[in-house]
Structure formats: C-alpha cells, structure tokens
Length: 149
Image 1: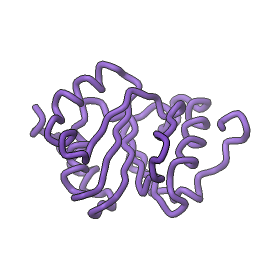
Image 2: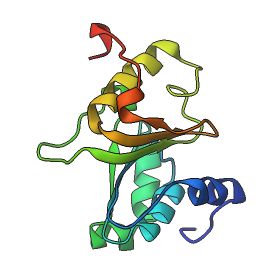
Image 3: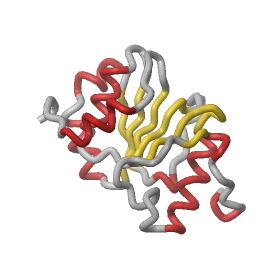
C-alpha cells in the first residue's frame, strides 16, 4: 500500500535535512516507501531512487504513479557501485540509504566502489546519510583509489 509507512522509515525520513528544491538520491529503495515520503517533503525537488533488485523497482514504480507523473520521483534498476547519472543530471544535494549492504560494512569491496560513485555524484557540500550514522559531506567521502573509479 503506497500510504503505509513504518515507524522506522518515518523516523529516518523525519531526521533527513529536507527542504524544497533538493535533488535527492535514495540508495536501495526497495518498494519506494521512503522515496515517496521524501518526494512529498521536497516540493519542486526531485528524488531518484535506485535498487539492485528489478522486482523492487517494479513494485516501487507501481506504487508511485502520482509522484512519477509529477516529475518529482524517478526509479532506476542499478546497484550504487555501478551508478552513473544521466547526462545533464545535476549533482545530488543529498543521498541516503537504509540497510544497504554495500554501505553498512557487510561488503567492503562493494562499499569502496559505492563511496567512489557517491563522491562523484554528490555536491561537495552535499550530504550522505547512511542508517543512523552521522551525515557525511560529499567532499569528506574518502577517496577509494583508482579501482573504485
């Protein structure tokens, strides 16, 4: 159901530094619940939500017709470590992830590649918010070396 949001997700979204006009990337969007909640809070801004699961993206798109039609929300089937923005896409103001293996330490190699991609697509002053960790500015993301580029 598109209108149902768990307390955990609602609390996470509430803590995000959202404001109208932001360009936001959600990593590991699953069925799109958080992406819809963020899209509803950023006015004329835009959310791009990605997930490595084609099934998750299909479910997210099916439950997000209103937000997609408004142009405030888009979905893409992609793992963060492989993510490349579309040509002409502006850098992101904010990227966030909840329980994403490539970013929570479960898969260190994927994590290094993911951080390299995030450093490349976030504004230098943009924020990366992962689970309950303190936000990290884009220009403070450590370099992953040539293998992550």
